[in-house]
Image (cartoon, rainbow, N blue to C red; front, side, top):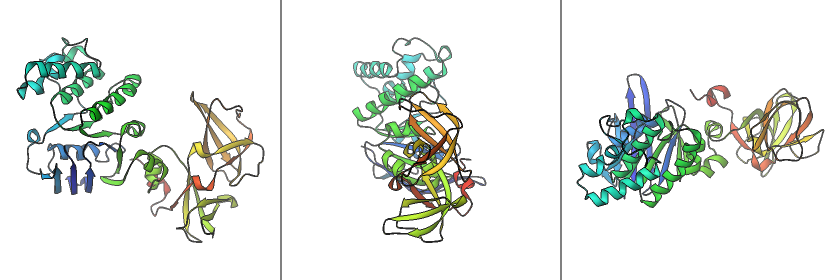
Length: 367
């Protein structure tokens, strides 16, 4: 079964560095995702693995074989493109069955595989339809079914669910993950949707400006981001600027603007160091009036947003910073615009980052 290894891979298009010295290992039978903002290089990296784009530097290994000069059709890969790339003169069945027929599979075997794939992508009742008779989402599902019937052990997926409506996308991503696991495939899934990647991936690589910032399980990336950008791109975060004023064995005390002080778990920062404190919205506790909990900050509710299962409060603190607090909507107490509140958080649930040299705004920018 295929394991993929990239060593110091780079690709430039004129002055644009699309992939910048990337080294990466995708394990055998792993469902791996590449995520990042548009233009970060994830699709280019996927096309390099497929052999559709030749790297300027670096090596690509598939199943311990160097494949830099191996053509795409000999790499044992199934590719689902962002664009559907279907045969317009073939109906759904013939598009899906193209791979098995080219490979000379026995008709009974290929037919069984085709039936299974079409049921999985919910097109088993549209076998006779041609691409121009299908919606964009349906065409993407045909493309997915065609890649899966080809018998490849490595599946490359470039935004495979992007054209689907929300409900089908939500359901199909779990079907796709289950199928990949049941068939013992290795899959690399490119998406800009971090919730999609978090739901189905064994591991994820977060990309920005052609580089990989961090690789880890969804839990590792969410709970222990190594970069401010990762902390912001995976889930959501509140970022508060401050300076370290005191250090203990397992905590640092941080002075925010306006003289507000909080503490956070860290042993790596020094007194006087400028830092960014990150606290996720769901970590905050919010209560009316003044409380004496650790890390309590007074503020006023400026806005509330009802999201069904959750309520998001925007709270302006005494120092004019705004934090977002997310609480379950079934909680006993709701707060209204204008309410004076206290928000607080446990030290061990926060993260501290060194203040970025180019400024916090540029570090968080997705463009």
